[in-house]
Image (cartoon, rainbow, N blue to C red; front, side, top):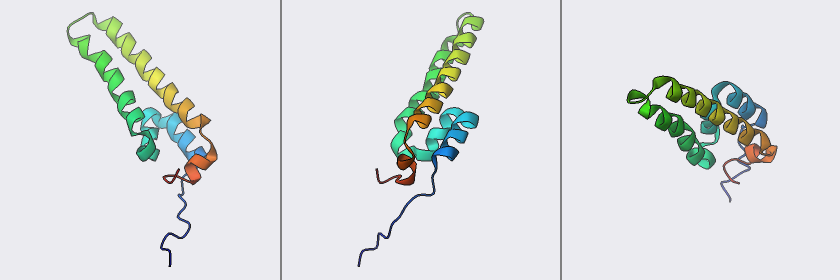
Length: 94
């Protein structure tokens, strides 16, 4: 007898979108098996921009840091919003 009896996830698109609105890139942790690379990029890009902040003019790099954080948040929100509901209901099988 087959032990896999309709193992559907409890994940929904609405909860993923709400996580993206309030948590930004950390919403990709909701579907980490499929979105790990996006999370890593979204986490380290603002940090890489902030790294020269120690040595250079701080206002410019702080401005770039906030722009990068907003861009990563927007990327996460759009990426999650355009995925179909079936991506979440069939996760991680898809």
